Image 1 (cartoon, each protein chain N blue to C red):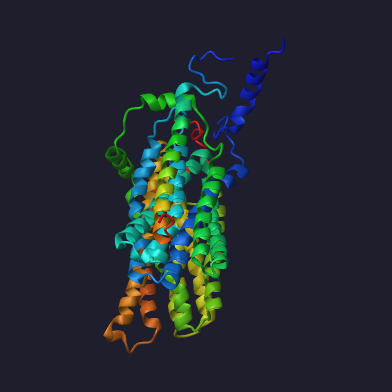
Image 2: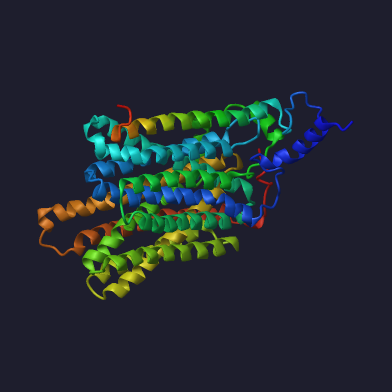
Length: 51
Length: 479
């Protein structure tokens, strides 16, 4: 089935392509995490829940 | 013995591509259902625009009691990103990707920014207005976080719209471009109207909790609709990925000078700017004009907006039909401006002579004119775009269009307020400041027509045969 040695199981992507798809996921998670942190800080300003 | 591993591998390999976000093959014919799905990104753009310009404008001033100048400043922040649309379009043209993607990564990033802006916006606004314990918070926290939220939403919607339109242009053949432009405009209008109604209904009983729910709900809807719109639209293309890898690096300055060296590009952009400015100034003033000068009730002025939108829809419909049977987009856009002028004259005269019926007719005419103008100029931009600079061309269109519309809306309010405040005008009737603005609009539309006439002549000489000659090459496969 596969003659490309870089091919990643089981999607049929090769290594570079899979890494690119993964990079979108990683970037998304980072942006999401940063925004969630900021949102929590802002909520803490309006309704403090830590002491 | 049964080979589980081989069995699992075979089955997984056969189902997995269905769960990956790219089209399997680059098909020549893109079905309408797929284009409809792609146009959902315009619904989210319309939603964000309505939330910024309409809903939050009111909520911040009335319910949150934020000073009006601060609100105006915050809402103008997304405009900063409008000129950057050119750069975004250019970057998507020259993007390097192992998957052969050019547009999807940018739409995805734009969606993330739009989502992020909405996610922090309600809390930022509550801190800004000093709700709850936030009274004690330092002032800069609310200011900077609200500014960041508006900037993120603005950046996101400009990225999504520019690159999304470029993707739509990539997907369809040249003779179908007018239909796609029409579809994109209709979906933008649809998104704006529907979300305005939904926001209005949801926020009638305002509470801070409801504000958080509504804005964060918009964030989720944005990501959902944009994912649905993107899914399997752009094909994975190893050929193109290899070409991207070896392609020489193009600099923005060079690409830009190539684009504007094309005959007619600068004139077209100038015409778009003048016309959009002319039509854009009316958007915010028609309702108060109807209310103050003609004595319309609130419900009646809301219907005015519906009439304007209805006229715009009629304009899009006429434009789509006329252009797909081979009309000249520039001529059509000029025709839109020509209809707009008597429309505004009717609006001005209505306060002195005939009254509401003439005003409604004038509003409808300006709506039709705006529809024809918007559709014609965007189609002309797409037709005029070189195959490898579609993103850049649409970016330039969007930069000019969004900047001029934004400045038009802002200036309309400022000019009216200044005239109302001038002591020399204090004895005049209520409709005078409005009529000054409407006269400015007529002047700008006339200027747009002046620019359009030589442009239309040029395009009918050089570009008339382009539609008749059929598609040059399949744009999906074009590098």
